[in-house]
Image (tube, rainbow, N blue to C red; front, side, top):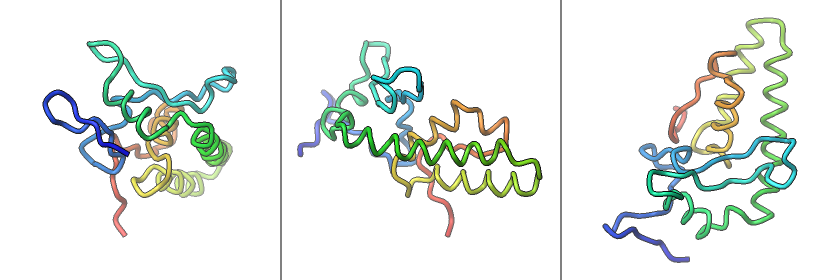
Amino acid sequence: MHFPLDENGNALLIDPADPTIDPEDHLKFNFNDEDDINFGRISSKNDEHGECKRGAETIKTIGLDRLNCRRDRIVGLRSLYSAYLEIRETADETTKKQKAHTFELKLGANNAHAAFARAFAREKKLDTRFGVRIPRCAQVEPE
């Protein structure tokens, strides 16, 4: 594997564990379950120059568009969706807060597909609907 650099010598790959880089600034996540072809895919966002170089290079170099990566994301999405439904369908406020906190743990930097999970939580507006704290970048939960 090579580590591509831009014309200024800066790394092009997105490090999902770097708390200063938000993958959502460079990548789009598809949760539209009516779009069977693209469901679970990650694509590069567009920036002022066209396709985002960091997003495109990360997808290409790491192979984020490989079928097995997409399958893993879809499995993870099923888990996220189940956790979301549990929050949504819980009537007791104390239990709802506990389930929201459990969901928050899935958004931390130590979890696989955390950026995908954070984008899902934002799409479902879990912060405003249920008080789920959604970090902008990778943040490690205190032990």
